[in-house]
Length: 325
Image 1 (cartoon, one colour):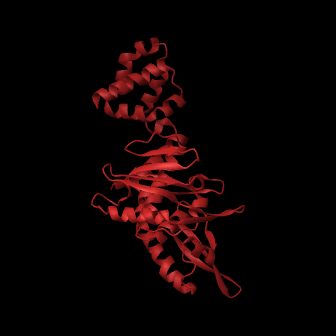
Image 2 (tube, helix red, strand yellow; image 1 turned 90 degrees about the horizontal axis):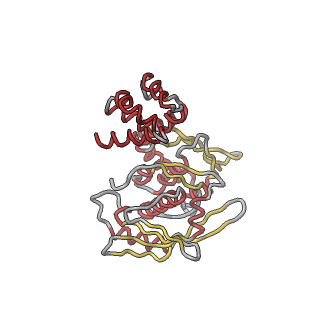
Image 3 (cartoon, rainbow, N blue to C red; image 1 turned 90 degrees about the vertical axis):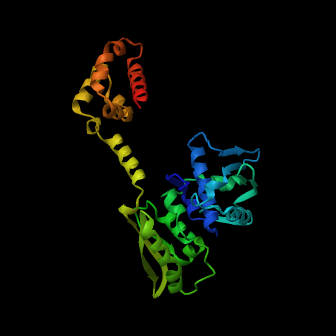
């Protein structure tokens, strides 16, 4: 795959906005959300990615064209061009308790053919809608969302991912979010053509899917309850391991990762539990690669004589590890 999996965090305002995108248009949107998240975190962009802000607060985005394709065999540049053209002509409708607004998604799309770079401008209101977490956010796996075959599965996955509680929508409102408000006048048709196929897609490949219940007002079905369900075997195992490791590091003792004798020996260098936990990855990797206690014993008098023994110790370990690797 050309994409590296990660969790995207997306404003719930944007998650529940009303827009009609096809699969390639959604992939462009995912890339924009990915860049917005990186920009918010202050990360340095590499690999021909760039974000530049204009005097009018628009964002000029540059992304390699291959990052919109599904995999290394996908050469369908025409579909990307069509998606850019379509996005240029489409609007996003979003609404909060304070305001309703319709805005264009992108402006001035360009494909620089010799560099294989896509460039376009993002309206600042789109940018801030993506990053406005005042009404909450949704969190989902990029690779999972990327590989769905229908936009309905993509949208419902964004809505349901990582949710703990059931979501209740007026059916007419959910139809608007999925941009099928003028279709499927019969509720049974909406369930049969949209909800059930999307649910089957999520059940097959998503770590988050849903069951549903139809709710009545009087005798008439008016709402739908989406009940989140977690499917362990569908979750990306690498992301799963990273989350577990982070959770353990935050809440657990270093003794879960290092032998007691190593933890006790490290105390000879005036290291606190916080020092050990902060550098736990380095210490574990060193202990798995060489005899950590022997190396520290060999260097002990130099470490303790240093102006900053802690910095000296960890710099020494990084150097030793790098040399052996």
